[in-house]
Image 1 (cartoon, rainbow, N blue to C red):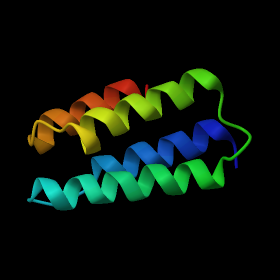
Image 2 (tube, rainbow, N blue to C red):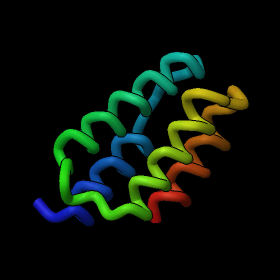
Image 3 (cartoon, helix red, strand yellow):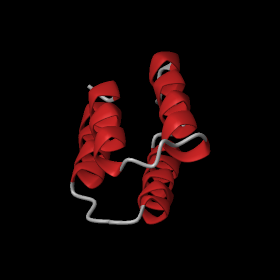
Image 4 (cartoon, helix red, strand yellow):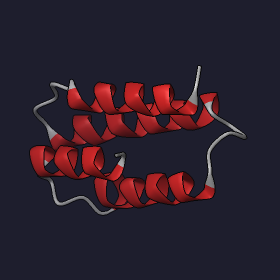
Length: 79
């Protein structure tokens, strides 16, 4: 599977999350990103690694608690 296809799947997973509590949302986002990183190990370019680290920072480690704005920002950053 190509890296582009995998990124598309990651975006779709995040886009279709139905969690209503931010804590549940961020746990799922973290799981999806970690799974993506494991599956794509050795294929991820440095700029995408940096984006994933940035996403983890604002979505998981220092969240604002707003699911929809965070989801929109993640999807934009994965373009």
